Amino acid sequence: MDDSRTTDATPVAVPPDTDAPTAAFFDLDKTIIATSSATAFSRPFMAGGLLTRRSVIRTAYAQLLYLAGGADEAQTERLRAQLSRMVTGWDVAQVSSIVAETLHESIDPAVYAEAVALIEEHHEAGRDVVIVSASGSEIVEPIAAVLGADHVIATRMAVLDGLYTGEIDFYAYGENKATAIRELAAERGYDLAASYAYSDSITDVPMLETVGHGFAVNADRALRRVAVERGWGLLTFSRPVALLSLVRPSTRSVVVATVAVAAGCALAVWLVRRARRRAA
Image (tube, rainbow, N blue to C red):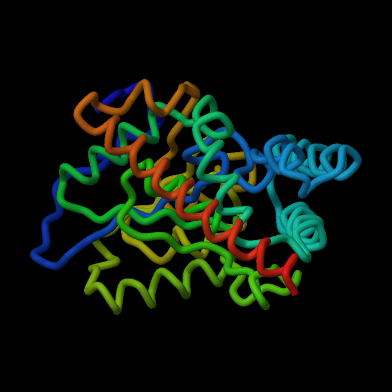
């Protein structure tokens, strides 16, 4: 284990001492990546005509508050409300196409090397890796695929006729994350007492409480205090790098091909829908 990665003596990613399946649950923003996944695609969304320059500035300001603050409930709710208003009327297929095409450009430089190494350690220990994020599934799922995650828990936006309505079907936040983790554990047979969870946010205390091994990553004062009280591990991730630089050569081509196929499929769906609307 890389001792510089942790400030706590609790073992990280050790082999399970149970015959039941186990999992490692990772928050995404500021835990695996050093930014907000929901706003990382602002520039390509603007280039695709989904965002105006003014809305990009508002989104960047919301992200600045999110990153500078402790990501408390009020800050996260403001960002959620801003993003919900912003995506109303967007074409789902177009969003998926843009995310797939610009994934490495938007996310690669912000991935923590320590997080990628830890994900690999958990896989080697025989655990499933689950990404749990309040960002939308259309954004989280491609990122999770590149990271090699086995499952995703993410916010699901309401869709009507291929367009976002601005309503939310499931908001993966706070206690909702913990509920979704328990539901997935029941479905997959995970032993949660032998499972792991990682997050930077005080709002994810319910998620960290759900497993037997909770870790606070780059914790602010509030989360650090709770982590010390609960006996959770404290980790520091500080090396954002390009994801492809950490992927083995044997799997790099698979990663690139997966993203390319996803981009092609999403673009085809969007073009068909656009042609139908013009013909209507």
